View 1 (cartoon, rainbow, N blue to C red):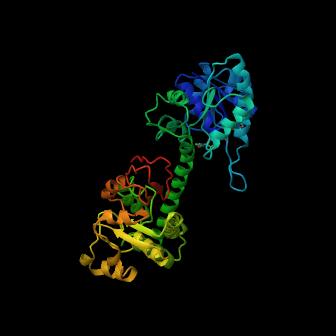
View 2: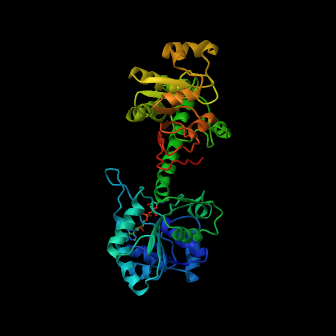
Length: 449
Ligand SMILES: NC(=O)c1ccc[n+]([C@@H]2O[C@H](COP(=O)([O-])OP(=O)(O)OC[C@H]3O[C@@H](n4cnc5c(N)ncnc54)[C@H](O)[C@@H]3O)[C@@H](O)[C@H]2O)c1
């Protein structure tokens, strides 16, 4: 394939070398004539393991070249990769000026190209890291300047880059996955074909999902490092080997290094998580250590509780029915259950509440579990119903607090209700229901799990 790459920095230079090594003819475009000259002399524009030999070899095979001439590069290719920088402004926003400059060129040149070749379909893969909505912004800009139609005459596809500096060539050939965000199947297939040789899974998503992924990934990586550093600081103050601690931590592939606990939803609770988090926080405090990541976790949990209250209040009439009250599905443990706190708050605000949870039988509550409920909702027994169908009939709003599969069946057969789902139950609600997820927006009523 003939490919043009805009931006010959880290991402652009590695893509140029690796794509040509995979047999493509690639022209690099940069506003910096020094970088263009380097490529045309068979030299890499960056210092990175293996890239110098790849660029030299591909240059001598005649598969790579570079230019400052946007028009010529766009005319001579049908697939372009944008890899220009997206630095942060002083206010913390993204500086899109380099990207928008490239988009302007595309608008002008594609207009000209369409006159000569009206059947051309130019695919633009945006590899730079950008905020959700940027691909559409670029497409609209190109439409304005060219008079062409996105996804018919050309398409802008999100194709984020996952390489790390220092191991960039290795990462290019071994990405964790290949992500393509597109509204055009045709454009998606073109971009996909670029990576046929790579061993990674190809994930196709909508554009805005693909665009946000780099931010989610990199924020999580920063969180991992900061968490490990805070744990390390606590351990070292206690004379405990922090590396051994994190080695042991990483051995738990069920709860620690796993998909578990990674689904957005309601606040956490229970008898252990809040208590042990508080314990570590207090330990750090007593050691005169600042651990802002660890200390802020509970605040996020409180915000999630406030969010649930706000969603219920926004959509609620008076009668609220809770499906589930335990701290999670399959248990009658009510201690520190976020649903109990939610119930307490709603009762305090004057809502009428009814609760169904087949795990919870008042007569069987004992010990600290009973004490907890006596302290928080002493009249819980009056709120509990034995038959979920009575609750569903009575309530205007149903709040799903635990992920009991029994609730899916019940709600699949419910009509004319507002369903507020805090746990993303697998349901296909009747279209007469209004379905609201606490932090996922689904206009569609069919949920995939
Ligand atoms: N560096 C990384 O490890 C890495 C990894 C993944 C994603 N990214 C993202 O990829 C993008 C590029 O990063 P980078 O590190 O390669 O940037 P870079 O600063 O190394 O290179 C950007 C290049 O774009 C050129 N350029 C600027 N304006 C231009 C224009 N109008 N037309 C053509 N070329 C232009 C610059 O001269 C420069 O050579 C960024 O959005 C970055 O966040 C970077």
